[in-house]
Length: 452
Image (cartoon, rainbow, N blue to C red; front, side):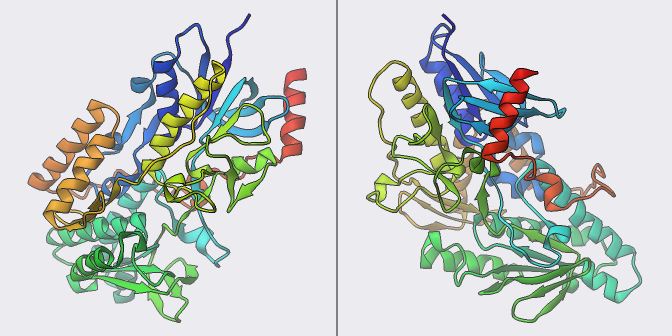
């Protein structure tokens, strides 16, 4: 008889942890493990702002899947449809070839995509911060604005190139604005023709508070740190319209700017809709054991699943889409897959939050380890220690620590790589969201591909 087939969709925090734990818990004779991911690495998202700012290289935050996984078959592609009754997944490889992968147990951890709204001009002129390519592009783009502003004799052009808008007052947006503001502030010394007073960063969010998860005290401290650096923070405000050289806010202000970085939240991967099962706020409905109740052998976790938060009493509470929860859900889901395979009892996922860290660049940070509020260098020590611990391989930890040290000592050379020059850089050019199938299309595609 053939071995049971376990298919893990997604190589992010949840998917990689799940596959890694499955390898450790199952002997090679017990099951075949396959992982589907468009990338050959797990991206450590919390440090993307450091890549955009040039503090770290892209390789430092990319944990190679094949360093972690020894016998898992890694398929370079995306799951674009799930036929749960047939226990089959339609996969499109990175060369656009499609095929069907059958499973006995399916673990869905496809992650999330940038959440957008129907704002005029956003799709054309907004830039995201969810992928390595986006972070590298934004760095090139910001340095390009400095170069062009320095070379221009037109005052209006200089003003528009030296104003930068970041939308989203959560962790990603605040850290992005803080780290990139440090980049442009440091660059002024290398651009003698630039007026430092013209360089302005705007951080806006429709919420009334900056990073409300931190609490009032730490949230206020983070606000003080970024505003002291010159970042103009506007709360209760969003974008009304975006154009090539202008961003209009909902309060009526028009900001001459050619840089709009959009970090206003995430939405579950479009893959979740292909199952045709119940969702909660766009995320797959699962029980406390992370099973999809109406799909036999299917588990879901991470950003795309509404996992009940039993640490908060269950009920309507669901786990937030954080790396901390995703990593621990990956391990817990693997244990439940092993239990299901061996005919044992599954265990509910329970995890108390270990705290929050926000790295604002340099020696500045705010953190809340185990509920203890910290700011300044002590918070930075905690934040960077946490990140080093969360990186899953020694090479990644070494590259990250070395990058921090080298940047602190030698600074930045503000080099543009140019690999994205003159190429489209819209949100949809970096994040694939339009290839997924409806439940009916997934069923039909499975049948046609199997018949071919």
